[in-house]
Length: 121
Length: 110
Image (cartoon, rainbow over all chains, first blue to last red; front, side, top):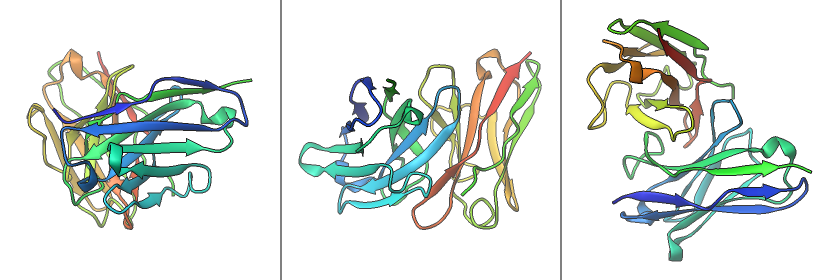
């Protein structure tokens, strides 16, 4: 079964760092792009960026460039999303998702369950 | 990079049809065939219901259909059913391996 398993909920304070994960299984992990999507409380979906595990080619939305880092560890079939200094406005659910075809970055047919992140003092 | 424009809400009675629009620009919706639509029920993970403007993944009822004209893509749901009540998001490829989502539309089945 093709699936993405994400790390658990996090509660952090402003200024703290955080790294959440997304582990793929049931398919050739290195051959499909992985996207990250943010959903703030009561709000819509926002594309944050995407990474190709095969060569770590990474693209960011201008809205998130410089504020988050997307990375991958091919040896453990896992993609990561990290912050060096969290803000209260980072409170959201973060989804990782995989496109339906290897050569595409769009059309996410596989989604992780989401990682809720709460940032509060 | 602004979000694609969707109506905040639409509604319809069971059995009726509704259409949700998604307006972008000549740099995204207008130029690429890669428009997808997602359905999200409260507290649930988004689900792909349309890809490549008009294509339905296996298992998605044919009541869901997609189209595009110029810079505007549309999702039509015919024969509305109570379980169709959800939030719907469009998403377009915008070049250089970037994507953009719409703001989302809440569908209410009256």
